[in-house]
Length: 307
Ligand code: FDA
Picture 1 (tube, rainbow, N blue to C red):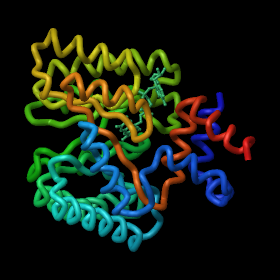
Picture 2 (picture 1 turned 180 degrees about the vertical axis):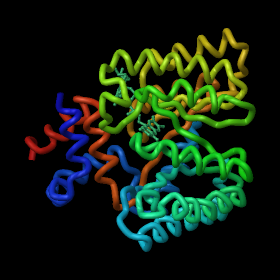
Picture 3 (picture 1 turned 90 degrees about the horizontal axis):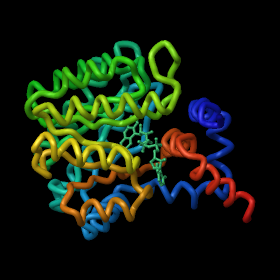
């Protein structure tokens, strides 16, 4: 029940200020966010690599309101790509971007976002890595898929994300299941209306399995973004029945969540990629993690009480 309230709070400036200023917030945020600085994110990449894990790095930022912020976010990713190249980490770490941080919601935003993300995708290719476009709320899906299609014309390895809670997603999976197509399947983390999205968690899970079947039967490269043990087991079963090689798909989980399971899957020979967010603009990401799981919220509340 608290989930929708927290998701609404994720978009409130007043609550953002209050939560960000609370001294207890920081240690809890640190569980989900690798740090505020680029060098901290690189340390996380090295630590995870030592444990046999791959990474996708997210420079935190979303819902910007002017063009200069979009340019700053672009530059942060350009610096990240340069650092990955300089440190020889391009094979270990790719990058995840939110187009709202690149100006997608501004007037004329699709062109602005495309203009900002293209140099990042080019820099990623030069660094020996690639970019995945995160998926945000349902109003952005068509625009994000159009930008994806443009980028794939020149950089076919650019990744997409689909969210099983949206009614449209099975169709999107069919469209994105072709040769070479890298697609991360997630359940979806935003507050969406009943006209466009399943509201019942069991329906979201059933839709996830249907999408998984489409992607695993296709010719692309599915990226299973879930901590759900059931989805992991179903993926392994589908890979067996489709005769898929173990390196023709990968698992992805978020930084700080189910770490032992991440290591277990990597040790079993799976490619396991950890989504590592870093940067100062952690509020929206943090609130979505609290909304997702009562245990995350309880951890936060306990730290308030134990002060
Ligand atoms: P869900 O929350 O339904 O939980 C199912 C089960 O998983 C639980 O019952 C429990 O067994 C286990 N589990 C879950 N969390 C756990 C925890 N903290 N500790 C222990 N067990 C736990 N969303 C989006 O809208 N756009 C995007 O671009 C992305 N990108 C993205 C990347 C990656 C790599 C991941 C993993 C997720 C995203 N998401 C996302 C978020 C996604 O939509 C979703 O909100 C979360 O992954 C939560 O859903 P799950 O499938 O993990 O399980």
